[in-house]
Length: 335
Image (tube, rainbow, N blue to C red; front, side):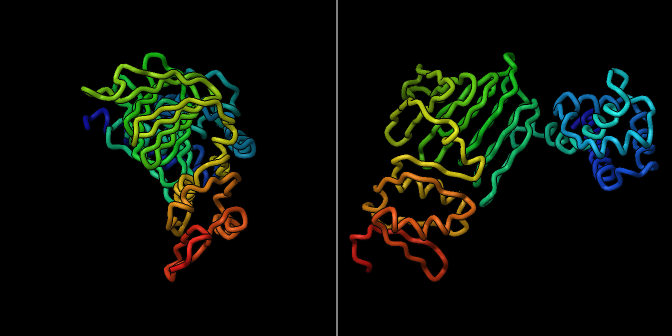
């Protein structure tokens, strides 16, 4: 890292420390006064706050109570000369920048090809990206972020993620999942990549879906445009594709802790549920795997769903001494 980059990291690191102090001591006159002096020590400090404010645009998210308490402490003019806001809002905006400094540090470093975001069981995670876009990661999802080139690139190795993309026609937003590239400029869409199946669900705008360009690859010159309210499906096992209209509120309900299905093979349902289950669920025979399920699975009560499943479908539920759940067709004898 060059000297300029190191200095930038130092400034953002110090801003992160101010985040901790200001949140812990929002009513301290000494803390606020010292913080303002730090902003004035170096024009680049104020510039860093201004840059973060543009990136994250979170002025309106600041608690009014905290904003009022700080505004009472001082009405000194903002060290960021370009801002044209009243004193109270100016202080609030600067506090937001302090809150976002840690995220800005991640934004700076997520330009590296090896930056990763991951989720564990059973939680989803929401994160901001360097360009102001956002990503909502489902449980057991892993993505790599590379915003250092001409394109904004996300590589998804597994799982599911919802993207809210900030428009930038000069830098397309590309999500690679399996052997597909999903390209957007400014839109909202979901990508799910599980067990060789990729599903792209578009909520807003239009995305382009195309196979990764390789010599001799399948349909290498083909691309699909998917609009709002539609879902694109691709199976890597047989290279089949499909496009259908969907209820996006149901397809994206995982963000609210619900998995909703209509006539979905039980094997696919269990594959999804296993991303949220603390103990793995195993289907022991094809007769159970091929059953179809219609209903809702709440990710915070998977055990309850499993206990009720034999009432809805002809399956037997067993539990091993290690706590693992197993499903088999009810018509088959238990060995």
